[in-house]
Amino acid sequence: MSLFWRIFACNAVVLAAATALLLWAPVTVSVPVVLTEAVVLVSGLAVMLVANAALLRLGLAPLQRLTRLMTTVDLLRPGARLPASGGGGIAELIVTFNAMLERLEQERATSSARVLLAQEDERRRVAQELHDEVGQSMTAVLLGLKRAADAAPAPLREELHEVREITRGSLDEVRRLVRRLRPGVLDDLGLVSALTSLTRDFATHTGLPVTCRFDAGLPALDPETELVLYRVAQESLTNAARHSGAERVTVALAHTGDRVVLAVTDDGSGIGVPCEGAGIRGMRERALLIGADLDILPAPPAGTRVRLTAPAFAK
Image (cartoon, rainbow, N blue to C red; front, top):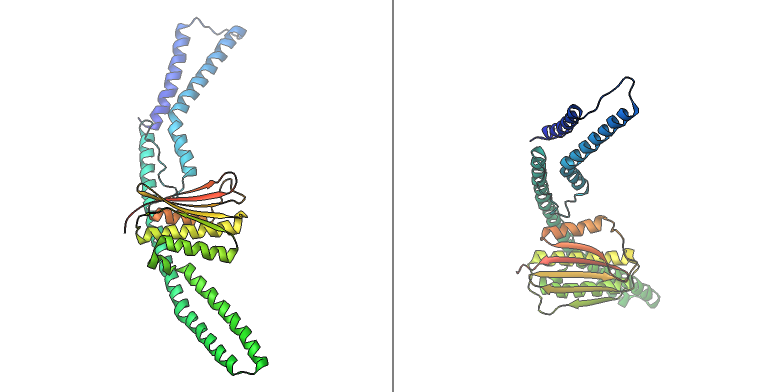
C-alpha cells in the first residue's frame, strides 16, 4: 500500500468510527447547542484527533528514522543502514536509500584510494628529488666549505666553520623531511623498525618522551597496511604535540587474532567530541583504504587515545 493510501486509510478509519458513534449513540444536537451536547462533540473531536495522530505517527515512524540517518550519515564511517520496515512505498524508499548509500561508500572508498596512492607517489617523488638533488648539492657545499676553511686564514676560517655548521643543520633537516615524506626504513626493515625510528625522531624534535610497546611475534603485513599504520601513528603523534599539551605519549602495537591494533595514547588535555579536521579525516580515509576501524577516544584519567584496528593481511 502506498503512503497516500496508508494515510487515507488512517483517516477513513477514524471518520468511520466517529460516524458509527453518531449513528448508534443517543446523541442529538439542539439549537442552540446544549452544554452537555457540546462537551460530547468536543470530546469526540479530541478522540478523533488523538487517534489520527497516533496512527500517522506509527505509519510515518520509518520516514523519521530515515530523515535522522540522512542528516547524520558520514561516508567515512560506513555501515549505517536502516531495516526496510514500513509498508509499501516507505519500505521501497528505505531499500533504495540503503542501496544508494552502499554505492556512495564504495565510490568514496575507491576515489580516496586513488587520491591517497597518488599522494604517496608524489611524496616518494619529492623525497627522491630532495635526496638526490638538494641533499647531494648541500653535501657538495659542505665539502667545498671544508676545503675553503682549511685553506683560509684564521679569522675567515672561523666564519667558514660557522657557515658549514649552518649548512650541516640544513642538510639534517632535509634528511628529516625525506624520512617524513617517504620512510625508507619501512620498506627496508619493516613496520616495527619504522615506528621505532619515527618515535625516536619525534622525541628528539619535540622533546616529548615517547614509550613504545610492541608485541612480540607480530605477523608480516602487506605494504599497504604497514604504510597506513605508519601514517596514522605519524599523524597522531603530530596532533599530540600540537594540540594536546601532553607530557608523555605511548605508541602500542598489538596482535589479536586476525587483527593488528595500533594505539597512540597521550596524557594531555583530552577531548570531548573530536574536531574532524583535515588530519583526522585523512586518518579515516586511510583506514577505509585497508578496511580498518579508527576510533578516537578519551584515555582516562586524562588524554586521548587514537586506536586503529586493521586486518592482518600477510605479505
